[in-house]
Image (cartoon, helix red, strand yellow):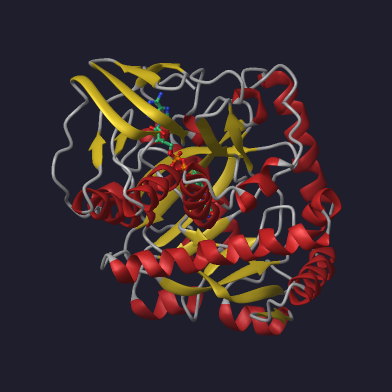
Amino acid sequence: MDYGRPSPLDGQSYYRATATPYPALSPLDGEARADVAVIGAGLTGLSAALELTARGYSVVVVERGRLGDGGSGRNGGQICTGFAPGMSKLERLLGRRDAEICFAVAEEGKALIRQHIAAHKIGCDLAEGQIVCAPKPGHLDALARERDELESYGYHQTSLLDAAELHARVGTPLYHGGLLDRGGGHFHPLNYVIGLGRALLQAGGRIHEHSPVLSIEPGSRSVLRTTQGVLSADAVVVACDAYLGKLLPAIAPRIMPVASYVIATAPLAEALASSLIRDGEAVADANFVVDYFRLTRDRRMLFGGRCSYSGIDPSDLAANMRPRLARVFPQLSQVAIDYAWGGHIAITYNRLPDAGRIGKSLYYAQGYSGQGVVLSGIFGKMMAEAIAGETSRFDIFGRIPHAPFPGGPLARPALTLGMLYYRIRDLLA
Ligand SMILES: Cc1cc2nc3c(=O)[nH]c(=O)nc-3n(C[C@H](O)[C@H](O)[C@H](O)COP(=O)(O)OP(=O)(O)OC[C@H]3O[C@@H](n4cnc5c(N)ncnc54)[C@H](O)[C@@H]3O)c2cc1C
């Protein structure tokens, strides 16, 4: 990623075009002090900041660009259950008892979204339900195993759909069935982020946009330098996820930023829209390289997928994504595409979140591997708890081992090969 260069991923997004207005947030200028400095105004950073402010800490958030400029304001908006690789991986790594705590954390992440929306009256088009579809017959067995696993964790909100049941709900013959999760959902992620930002300002927190942190000098009082200012704080929350770049080399190799593209069509006629997703849930497929789609409140089809692992993004994202949309919904092959954009998803090697502490005062959480809409908020909250001395559940996640990507995030050839493996696996599954 080169932040200086224009990128096709920064094309006009549906979310920016329909964003809730908010007051200008001036860059950090000169010297400032806070109990806690938060780097990054996405879901992780703002959630940590809100929780810290509620606990009486003074908090300053510094953001390179604007609120939600990272994955948080660009994503598919899908509210998912649990963790990307499933609970069995956590169970193998941490044992059943701690895996149960992790599952409860992820569920709390879902509840937190609804709490924030209600408490801060955030208008962000929240809708209920998510369906994961089976592109291959074998995926249906995997989805049945996932349902059983979730039930063993006390989660009873999923139902397996056979091909006929799925086709009645999702208007494409492409899938062999699916798993309906009534506890999932979707929303307008940027408006949710902006709502959190406004709530933070009302609670007395400070946010500075256009304030890239250039360096961190950790210490009993850490010092962050931005282009125009210097911020010192007792504790620092690093919430940069896929947009971390070279800021913190100790954790950078543990995540790989993978590009994903999103398009939004022109508004669809009511009958057409409901023939595509009858009950308006979020939909994703069960591939490793996931297609994800949903209807927006104004009945656009918002369709994402097609990761780039090579680091080279096509210049015309709309043209690139159209065949993928038409493969799922041939009915939409001629529809106008009004918006096309993209963003980077941070994945870890084991697709579990990477969270921990460096020294006594630097906290970080990253690498939600495609499930950050829910996990980012609760990981932000857990970092705030840890800063306040309540470390027990944050420390459980710190025990998850994370292998660095060979050569770090800049080693594109190794990543391209590695991800090609998963692409082929999707085709053969
Ligand atoms: C296209 C796309 C689709 C996705 N779809 C889904 C989905 O449907 N469901 C789901 O669960 N997850 C999805 N994700 C993942 C999800 O969006 C992320 O996991 C989540 O938003 C991470 O939140 P965050 O706050 O940790 O990081 P981000 O939202 O990326 O925020 C990091 C922030 O840090 C700032 N920053 C970085 N470096 C600096 C610096 N040096 N100084 C100051 N600021 C800095 C960045 O500008 C950015 O605003 C998707 C991601 C993308 C890109």
